[in-house]
Image (cartoon, rainbow, N blue to C red):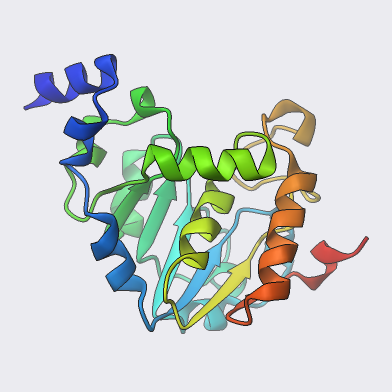
Length: 210
């Protein structure tokens, strides 16, 4: 099975890779009627006290390395992890998410052990490309997850740790100039979601300041 997986990645066989994934309809069914906490990796979240609110959500979704510097600021619960890069095995073991979501269209980075994990979801390439067209550039893992949530029937979605790279990221040391994302475009996208979808709220209101 591993050889067929590697061949599917090498040849870009989306159909074969999608067979390993939960269907989109099943993912949306999981979200229906649920309260969601989506945890971004902005360093500014470390100064907050949102841990209890985060853990009270029905589904807590963390991103990439899923850093939790403090239970006070970040909570302790992890139900899903959305990834665009492989996650260290020790972090995966500690967080123990029920679902792993591979978000990026770059399939060659996808490890076999994640793709064959129970609860795995492969973000559809068509969804990534549609979002890319909307912001005229490659979306971040967080924005791809927000896009999925905006198309779901979730009851409530609260965003934490999103300041569009103003305070940099807990999951790396790069500056905004060193990453291939347009954070102004992403900020505009999120502002539009917040303005038009009453289910969404942002717990970093200063991030929206002009």
